Length: 430
Image 1 (tube, rainbow, N blue to C red):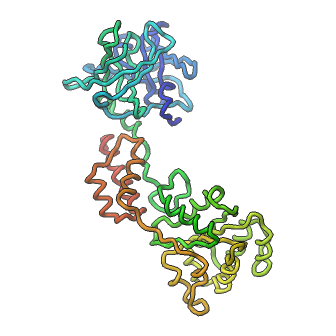
Image 2: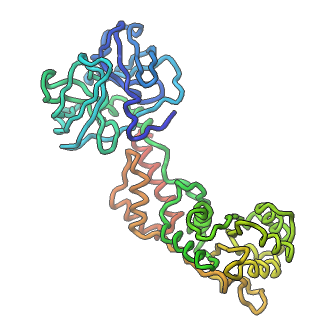
């Protein structure tokens, strides 16, 4: 199933032909599912209903018409064929007064298709209210077409009837709130997967990396000044994700080009394993000491080494010698290595077994402390992630998340993930 971009809802619109003659409009709301008005297909044999899909210049057959509520002018058509990469519209709650609306259908005077624009007047009363809209002409053939909320580009209703086919008085549409009452399974199809992912571990996909622009810019400012960087922060604060973001942006944000190499020391066993991993990543024969220094000096561009979980170098199997060599390789403006390391504690508290009790990275890496997310960042995360969903968190829920997580990114993601799932289950009736 293909996702639907903001300007692609027209690709979902189909013309409904009855016994070979155009009779109305419908649109895809699920894989092989077309929503329309019941009066367009009422009392018509399934064999006499065909669907013309202009986007693919293709004719489709119908196997079933589902009309569960005789009080509401809606029908769901089941398509016989399996349609690969079929787009599906996104839906939203009812529009508000003066919202701008759009449509595209197959009216009797322009059966090849015609757009329309309207303004929402509001909702009528009654058990099954209707959207009343004006400032546009609705002719026969528009029945069953989608009514699109212009600002969000999501479907908010199904056009039912005109107020005057010969003027711009507008028409009436069945709102999404009623559609979901009649066909609750359509709401499930329009609830996207939980956007608050991943809840644990490193974020290595650029589109999932949230904010941290200030910290990322600060890291590159330090690197471009000729120094190395140590990213310091509690566990699950986003250090690994920041290192991966540095890797992704190195090509565009470094003044002096360097080839980024990311190594997670949790996967490295000892000194020998480290040298093998480093040499493999930079494409030289396995070596250490002077030979490694010479090999690195010959490389163009030079290397930006991103060492995650550097505390691992305090474990058995790692020696003071490897830390000393890394310090030497990263020392100086033209150093063959530039380092970005991550640690859970300040450098002054690491490697107390080093000569003189001083961390080998302490004087060549400037520390960049990684804070938690503040209130504004958390609110923006929630707003952005929920933007393409029918779910929203209220102010009280946001406040509770902010208070209980204390801005810890991983805990924020887990709390949002759980609340989203609770809303999703409520919407689909689980």
